[in-house]
Length: 168
Image 1 (cartoon, rainbow, N blue to C red):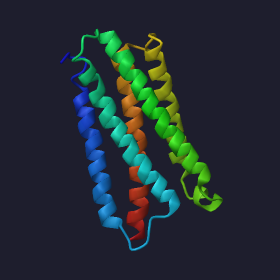
Image 2: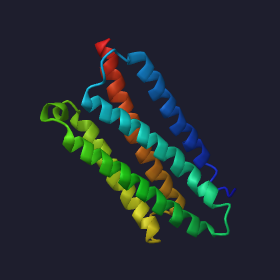
Image 3: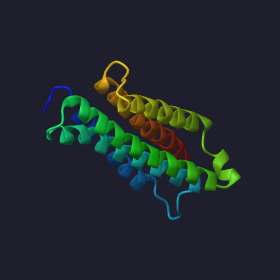
Image 4: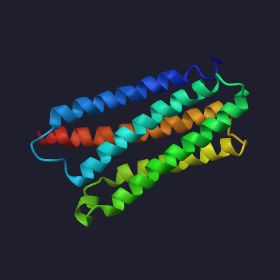
């Protein structure tokens, strides 16, 4: 494994830890009734972004084992990451607009601003990798995109965990 890919395994571990924290959180705050729709969508976003983090972290490592050169590994990985991110962003947008007005108002505006801003910046960085004009190198753009996606999950976790713990 090339040294430019070694740091990605740490991100896979962080993403897996986020999934673990979400699972523990769900067990601790689970009530008899279901979560409200606005909480359910944020929980799904946490889990989906963590799974994207795991997949996107391990993808370049796996692709590096092929006969592709390093630049091609980053381009293919960026294209796949961009598709995964687009899928989650589309799912989230559709689910958000399916919420009732009341449920939509219960989602803190900061979550929406952080989430969509991070997704837009990550998409731009990945697209630049795909177009082979990365900012400060392929690894940098890819890693920043990964951090942005994981920050969306972490932000959702933080806000919903604080909110639920205050309700206990």
